[in-house]
Length: 468
Image (cartoon, rainbow, N blue to C red; front, side):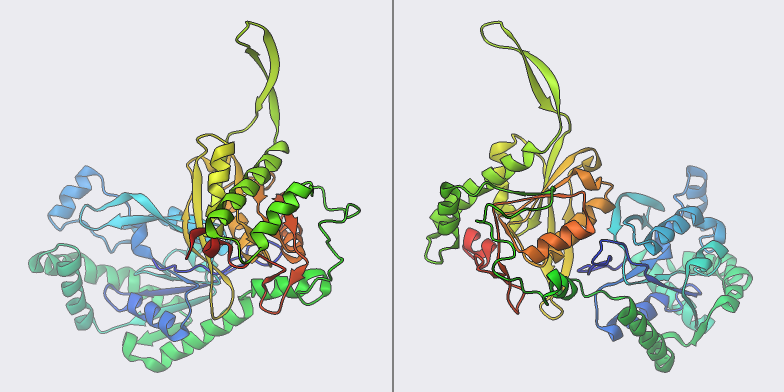
């Protein structure tokens, strides 16, 4: 499986994109994976998902394990694969939904307890010996390819692979090839060639065919790709990314905001703290002190909007008092790095709150957000999620973070987005895509400059906080 630096798999409305699904089939050791990786290298982009059919082998029961130990189990037969799980996984990817792909261990012939989480991509490349066998799976594919390689070459490659990577002996590989692999190719795999849109003889050696496929995939990427940050900035109030100074003046008491946009009361004390944070000459220790003060205020404001239930308690004097308790469990999720600056304030307000991490960084070439890491608390879908990110400019990272939570079955109305400052462009982007998400902030910026930076802004919040 390959999925690195995930680019947006949704549009500016928060809707999942429909990816282009390319299926690659061929005999065992025909070079399917190499062909798929060559296509990725030719494209020179990271937001294509490559998934192998090997992940969907069935775990063997004890009787089958004994047969496998004697090289008497047919791994090349259609019955060796879990086609129901394979179809469900590809269908979800086709719908742009998060999937948990199994990881198969060829030494123990079983699935590992852990899985690989994958999000919808602009293009999904699926390869396997019987990738074109199941009609349900074929129906999902937009383009099908069959890699046709000489049998002697396939046998030599299989010997090298199974001995070095799967702990096999040469005799066992040859015996299995004669008994199962070659008959399975003749009876099942070769017959799927008729379902291929493109047949690639000689695999990697056929540069013309691979170039044709790569160019076709690239055209699909250009058609289906979404430039999230650029579109969000350009659509902000129809001003090309700029917002007039008087559009959202956070100090103007007459300014009104949507019901799910919660702005801290603009007291002289808050304005003093924010002034210290904005001041470029503020020392790091002072910056941390004021940042954590504001973080606590933002968290407290966010908690005010949550549901509560009645609760009876006894005071130390023995008197009964009817109070309230939180109706829902809480958890936090920080958008790294600047979201981590609010964790200390969150922990000081909500004792022992579990906190997850999302690493979302900007691609310096495309300026698009990329998801690099995701670690969320268990049972997050049962919790109200306090999502933290110190600054929201265009809203591109915020949209990605919220989309990840939704893909993990967190209800939209159970997400509270906490930030220090936000530009009107980012606020409008979030509430337009996810109108049930509540946004809490200390101040609203005037707008964005040509580099999508907030004006007046605070600089790089994470660098100033962590001293990097």
